[in-house]
Length: 251
Ligand SMILES: NC(=O)c1ccc[n+]([C@@H]2O[C@H](COP(=O)([O-])OP(=O)(O)OC[C@H]3O[C@@H](n4cnc5c(N)ncnc54)[C@H](O)[C@@H]3O)[C@@H](O)[C@H]2O)c1
Picture 1 (cartoon, rainbow, N blue to C red):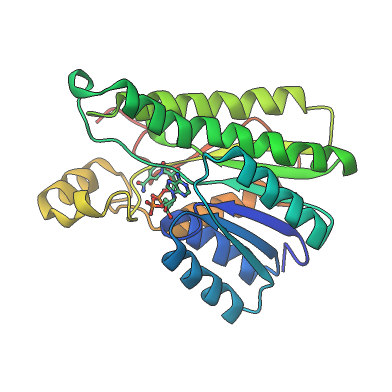
Picture 2 (picture 1 turned 90 degrees about the vertical axis):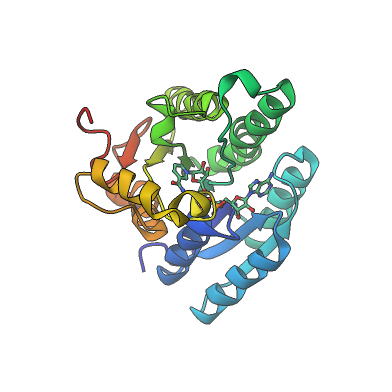
């Protein structure tokens, strides 16, 4: 019960990595505040967390909505009086070669993967600073470290998320608030289900992953919990790649 009675916010908790992360915190005794714009799937996450005995509140809105972010954080503070952990997970992918991208696509991807992450941190950090304690874990991507095929805007958004993490860590370094990132490799979720439905494509990736398999959402959740925990008390500004070794060597 590493997170007993700690208040944990998870964005994008309806599905994939966000749901697995919320449930992993639930198993460790956390009080959960979850959000997503997929009402039906978020309700499933809530039921699964309750079955694990968790206290949980859910908020359905588009993570780009600044007023709704502020209202959720204010409501969580009213209800529980503190926020111990923030996991910025909500994100969208891109499979579009650069020549056919558009400024609208830039605004959408950067708005969700970049600006909304900033807005969430901006809303939560003052409450963490008030008690000089807190941990933020941002979900970036190995695509924030290396360029992928047809992912130029996604690359930019995840690079921005990584450097936002480092900038926050630098500015808050002398406080009790830490900020780190987890950079997943190829994980089986809603984001990748079309790609992995094609056995040839899945095999192509598996050949390039030293551990020989694509990741599970729980593989990422485990890393998030580590960085959010006291076991990581001397770690801030780090990006932990969780990719089965995919980026440790040239392929
Ligand atoms: N799956 C992978 O291989 C992989 C690899 C690297 C990074 N990631 C990152 O992991 C995070 C989670 O992705 P996932 O793989 O679990 O995908 P997913 O599609 O299964 O889950 C993403 C969640 O975010 C929510 N979301 C998206 N846009 C939103 C918005 N505007 N407002 C509110 N909620 C929104 C979705 O409804 C969904 O529940 C993302 O930031 C993604 O970029 C995933």
